[in-house]
Amino acid sequence: MHLNPYGEYAVLLAASLANDWPEDRAGIEARTLEGGMTMVFPPAPNDHAQVRAVIDDWLRVVDENDPATRAELLNAQMASAGAYPRLTNHDGEGWHLHYRDDVQSLPYVLRAIINVGTSLHLVTRGMDRLSRCEASPCTNVVVDVTRNGRQRFCSVRCANRAAVRRHRARVIA
Image (cartoon, rainbow, N blue to C red; front, side, top):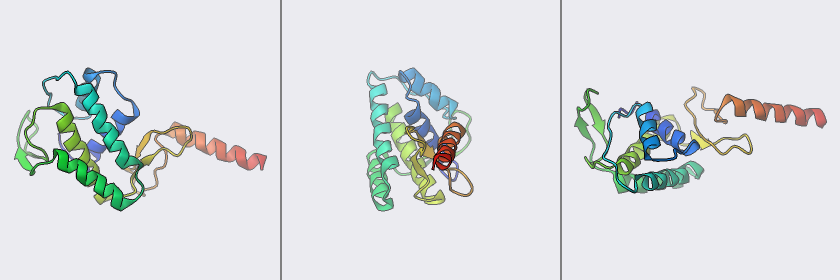
């Protein structure tokens, strides 16, 4: 898996899994492949539940507003799956960095990739560039990849819904 300079690749994968949780391990693997991850891992009986735990831990980072506490959470999560970065060339991807040991476990690899990607995203884009959608009752994760750093909604649909609510509130008032 290639991490672009801002970590968006992995953080967008995490948001995709959080916002639309797959029914089974095959769905998780399909999502990772759609996102550009080329490696597949031997299935283990508890992969689905363990990846869910990875996403639930990651959502604690999403829901934390204090930058210092957010960093502490990410550091702890990276420590649990991290290793020294290493150059690798597999699956015709060309040379790139892995931020994990060569453990062949889908949950382990996703924990490392998602947390390093999230860290890269936050330190290069801003510690406030990860949140929940502001259109109630939506609770989807928003990964702000906009140029101006003002993305507040997970989709155009939610943004439009919020705009209609604001308009109606002004008309009634």
